[in-house]
Length: 154
Image (cartoon, helix red, strand yellow):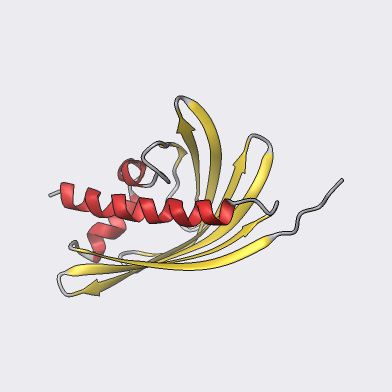
């Protein structure tokens, strides 16, 4: 039996949106809005199976491609300061196999009449897989879709 080491990465991303911190924060807090922008790619449908946006609350999401589940994400909220920050952990798995975990820190900073969102991901892949690249690419795509969603909502 071979053992692959865990691999770690910290990534920081920033976006500036022409929406108030309250509006950007609300797009994270509302599961229906999050479902629209939170998918890791255009090919993946994000299904929200459970949503409990509060400190200690848990979200359960399924990533679906062509009708088939390909990944499961369970998030637990550790800190929520309305319109300012969200800190939570995500456990990422497929079928019965743990792929890894991320600590996600999102900070909503007023920037003129808009918001600068600073996102930090601290991710560990437990099997040496390409999960680290996938998490970073997925969040890059999601943050771009968040911007489009904020522009579409008046």
